[in-house]
Structure formats: C-alpha cells, structure tokens
Image 1 (tube, rainbow, N blue to C red):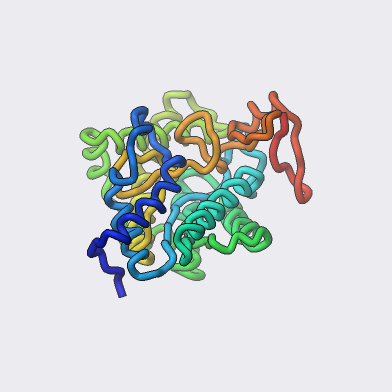
Image 2: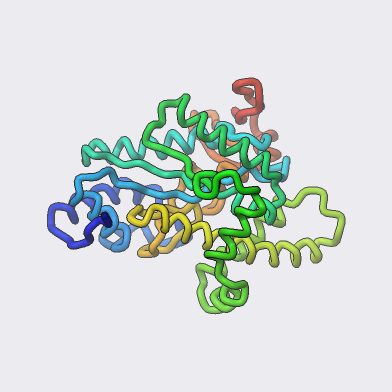
Length: 311
C-alpha cells in the first residue's frame, strides 16, 4: 500500500529533524546554501513525513557505487577499498543517527549501477560483478545492517549483461535528442553532461587517437551515460516508489533528488570509485587520484591488496 502524503504538525517537525541530519552533507555546487534550512527541501520532507506517519523505517535509495574507474592513475584496483569502506560506514552511521531521534530508524538501498552503463565506461562486466559482490561482503562483515545493495541481478536475474542493458534502455531511457534539448536550456543537465564528459576523458586509458577525437567520443558517450542513468532512476522508482531519492551528483536546493557527499573531497564531483583515500597526518580522510595520493603518503594494504594511503 502506498504511503499517504497528508501532512500533520508532528510528522512535519520530526521529518525536518531527520532531514537536518542530512543537510551538513548536502552535495551541491550552490555557494550560498549555508543559510538554507530543511523547509527548503519540500520534496524530501514530504517523502520522509509519509514514513514517519506510518511508523516505518525511512527508506533512502542511492544510485552509485557502480565499479572502479578503469584509469589506474585514479584508483588502486577494480575492487572496493578504504574509500568505499569509509563511505559505507558513513551511510550506516547516518541511519543510526536517524534512529536516535526516530526509533523505527532508516535504511539505505545502494543501487549499484555499474552494469547499466559498463559498456559505455569501458569496464568489464566481471569486474563490475566482483565490485558489487565485494560491496555486499563488506556490508555483511562490517555489520552495516542498515544498508543493502540492489543491482540489475535483482531485477533481471540471469539474463546476459548486454540483454539487461538493452531491456533497461529500451523501456526507460529518454532519447538523445531530448537530452540535447534539455542541456541547452537547463543548467543542471548541462553541468551533469560536462561533468560526465570530463570523467570519461579522465578515465580513458591507452587511447591512441588525438585529444580532440577522444573528447568527441566522450561527449557522445556522456549522453549515453545520462540516458542509462535516467533509465536506472526510473527503474529504481518503480521498485522503490516511496523512497527518498539520494544522489552522488550535486543537486540544487529543492530538487527531487538530494545530493549527498560521502567523504571530504576537493570538489563536488569526486567519489570513492574515481579516486583513492588518503589519511592525513591529523587523522582526517580525503579522496584524490591515486597517483596524487602516492606523492603525499605511503601505500597501505588491507586483506592482501592495496587499500589507501597515509601521509
């Protein structure tokens, strides 16, 4: 049964308190957000209030944690490492903090989307499977029981990876023409397109053509990634219709998706799967390309493989 959306004073107040726990971690490019409070996030408040009135755990969906970048200058390998471990702990702790003020608590469904566009980002499907399996293992062995992983295997079972991508694209993806028109009129879509293009250029290793040819190819692939990302978002909404939608991309105040920053990063776009974790001398963590982190600290191994750097 769908959650009701009729407001009341108690649920609205408690919902604002829950959202206030997320606000310090809002991922946005808005430089003037410091004075914004929970009331500016009406979409999220209404979704949270519906769970509160039902006395149910607040469910968040977070598309992301797809796979590691294929560029060895940015990451330490194709499996999750300290960046993912820290991010998962942060998300579980956020749910735990919500539970302190709202006893039913919260849970976050990590919608691992690597297979959705693995062919476009040039990451092998077996690497994506291994990454997603390791995420599940990290959650289980670390007792992060407020988190779960959802991917295309949960939806389309044993179909081949190309068949799964085709199914999702054909059923949910907008046309490239629609996205091009949107990018001409909407600043957020344009920023997303440029950000994804930049990542695709940076993530391409071993390209033998010219820089301009690479950029042209990545601009085309960027629209494909956005198509598949939109399709994945619609599929998630169909399977989790009442959930509060989080995003690892920057989002403006009041948007239907709430951008969330997982760790301290040098910009609003860096994620654990495009970088390596560096522990500073003061004990705090940040993310940066592995090649840059290697110049600042020593490599640390965990469970027999590279994990992070320590300054």
